[in-house]
Length: 431
Ligand SMILES: *[C@@H]1O[C@H](CO)[C@@H](O)[C@H](O)[C@H]1NC(C)=O
Ligand SMILES: *[C@@H]1O[C@H](CO)[C@@H](O)[C@H](O)[C@H]1NC(C)=O
Ligand SMILES: *[C@@H]1O[C@H](CO)[C@@H](O)[C@H](O)[C@H]1NC(C)=O
Ligand SMILES: *[C@@H]1O[C@H](CO)[C@@H](O)[C@H](O)[C@H]1NC(C)=O
Ligand SMILES: *[C@@H]1O[C@H](CO)[C@@H](O)[C@H](O)[C@H]1NC(C)=O
Image (tube, helix red, strand yellow):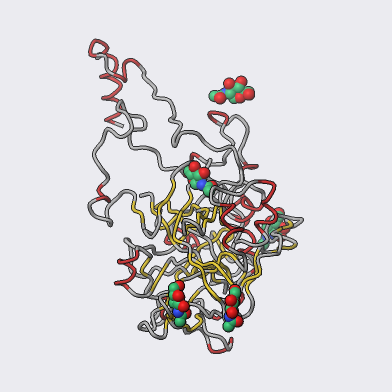
């Protein structure tokens, strides 16, 4: 209060010094980055989840300051590329280009795959993929399912072939919203479905039994066919392409040995992050996110985050946050995004992605795993009716709200693990 009074007093007397306060200079909102995309599917058109340039509301231009501290030391504040076997293409909708591998299955059919994580620290550094030590435990799985989390294979002739589990990319993704509220939906159909032996995890029995995250992203299609999509997917071929290739693929190019995948925005300990979506053990998130429904991932034990031999890390998904339809009229700059938008209702209504909350990512903790254990949280009627509902961006915020009783499981019971695993490799942190 004292400081404000002083500032106002200065403003009154300091006109001759051309103080910005005295001039009443107001710096307009920046259009950063470049423009906001009106495409509601993108989720990246929303100024409330973009990281503002540090020059915003100062008298200097963007880029005038020194480099972020994170460039020197990854633990400090600023952006860090985490998955470095490819590159992020920044833009309104960032995407990620990474190496594409060809495989020959146990049935001698072609498939196409990528690599994003490994339990081997040295090879993670060497190849630029994420180091995820928990994958060794995820490979074991729970004995009740009869199948382990990973398929055991050998490196032969410098590649890994002979996979038994395969993916059917032919289904057409669809979701029918529920009647009372969009979540839970009436029906879901994932756009690709793994058979009972398919798992994205492979364990190399002649290379230290290390475990690699190696999702299959295209089925039995030849190189010539895929080379048509080196620069993207022409709209007249989109439906056919989607029946052969993973729904997150934006371009694919065996000729150049690369593939470009969409990235998804989320939060980890209040840092805005980008991740990829590959597979899910439950049809609902697999459908919503455009991933492969991979029932075998249910072999990975959930509910034991960070315990001895746990393979997973926690992931918090809201069901009933604000949607853009809740934004009252008259918002500044004709803004159409509710600043606290979040959750599955919002995503199903087409506002953008649900803005999920990830636990640990590399550089901030040791316990990252690309296998995320869903905790579904729902605002109680009390929270909604009394304006307590908001957007949460960190694990400990969710746990605090749950401990106090402001959020619960969707059925009103205390927050717990939902028994669902999604394979979502981390790509980048913005802060
Ligand atoms: C990837 O993102 C960049 C930047 O937004 C964009 O220019 C490019 O077209 C995207 N690539 C594909 C294949 O969609
Ligand atoms: C595997 O398929 C290729 C053609 O894709 C064929 O040349 C080869 O003989 C097949 N091998 C076996 C063991 O069936
Ligand atoms: C190993 O790869 C080379 C080059 O592609 C090929 O000529 C050779 O037949 C392969 N050997 C085996 C055992 O598959
Ligand atoms: C908001 O929309 C109205 C109607 O289209 C337009 O006249 C007005 O200039 C817009 N205001 C801003 C700040 O963009
Ligand atoms: C919460 O509100 C909804 C909609 O008004 C109602 O259907 C539901 O029964 C309420 N739940 C509880 C536990 O009061």
